[in-house]
Length: 112
Length: 115
Image (cartoon, rainbow over all chains, first blue to last red; front, side):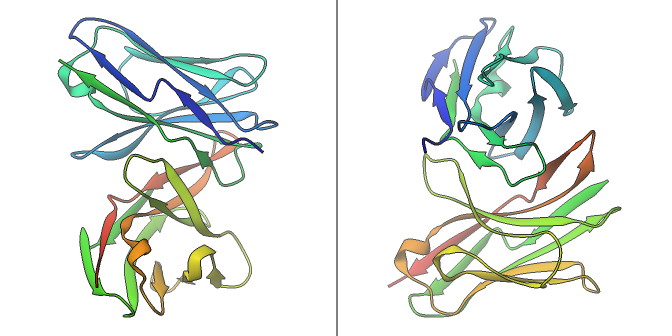
C-alpha cells in the first residue's frame, strides 16, 4: 500500500509570491490534515479536510488555505509569502480522522 | 483544551543503555496519546498509541509507553538503545474536536545515541 505522497519535496520562492503544495493520501483515507513544522514553533496544525469539507482549522492567517478533491487528494495554498513561512509542511492522512495519522515526508518551503 | 510537555529537548544515552523520554499532557477529555519518531528529512512515523484499555502500550522497534492518569504522563522507554534509534521523538495528545481527533504535539526530544 503506497504511503502519503507530498509534492514537491523542495520549493524555493520569494516574498510576495504564492505557492501550492499537493498531498495524495493513502488509498481509502478520507481525512487529510496539514501541519507546519519550524524550529521555533514546532509542529502546528493548519487544517483538516474530510470528504472535501474543511472540518477543523488551526490558528493561521487567511493567507493559508486548502482544499480537498473528490479523490481525497488535497492541496494547500499560501499567498503573499513571508519569510516566516519558511518551514517543512507535512500532510497526514487517516481513514476517518479518528485513527492515527500517517504522515508524508513533507515539502520543505524556503522563502528568499 | 489540550497540551503536551516533553521534558528535555535533548536526551543522550550510550548504545545499550535504557532510553527514557518523558511526556506529560493535559486534556479536558479522556485523551488519546501517541508517540511519533521523525528521522532527518522525513515525516513522522507512529511508534505507538494509547486509546483505551491496557495502560502499558507496546510499539514498534522495541519501544513501549505507560499511560499514568494520576500523573498525567505517557513516558516512552526502550530497554536497550541502538544507534538507529537516534532521531527526533514527538509525544502527542488528542481529544475529539469537530468530529475528529486532531493531535497536539509536544516540542520534541532529540535522542542522541553514543557508541
